[in-house]
Length: 356
Image (tube, rainbow, N blue to C red):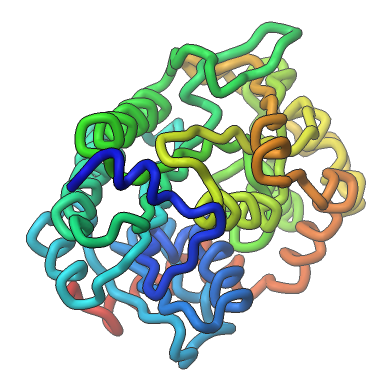
């Protein structure tokens, strides 16, 4: 594969026949699959997910039977399996969402995060490199996180040139994966782009994360744990806006480029808790402050000017609107929430699918 061909072959507006989406049954991945199937019915979306606890095919019920979408259960760390998928489906693009992503879990068991987030990424990169020698316009997009940059003080923003300084096993594994993506571009000429996004919220969010946990516990009048003083600040982005950004990076993003994706919605954790409780008509007495998490980053904030300048993206859903839409979605989809909390979806789909 010629590196110059790969870089120069990056199209200003690429089109694809078959896209391999990994982790497409998870929160952001499933929202992206729904977005792509709706917007590009001419594409074939191969959705690869190992259906761990956070992978839920209930997220994709609205496209059951759609000929544009093929679900395959499997592990991105299994090189033989991944290469067989490339042989069978011949994807000309990969969007990698597959990752262990919960910081608390990474503190309890870092090795799982190393395996999936680093080795899984390297396995996908190898398969793409080995199969795309005759496809100079094929594209690999790595979906990363702003957490790779570490923590900010009270001022300033993460830029694409901000040095990586991860503070948790989760963010360290994502930063390592990003470095492999960069290396495969620089060494092998693979046409890659990386997106680093702020905190997402919206439909199908697994209820171990802050906003769905608040909603879930509040609906049952359960205590809502808040780390430390609750003043950790995050930049929040509605998931559909994130999907639009990844879509643009996939089709128009520069080879070897990194794009920060932010929502311009900095909020303290405690402020979000109180807002959701107010909207649900629940008492703030449900709030329980607990010991702070080890290595808890104080503030994240994204400078997303590059993706706006180069690709024309900016968020369309501001937080005040998005949080109301999110609360309404959970109120309208209590059955989905209950199935997730009791784990029924895991048994059902594990019986339906076996690894390819």
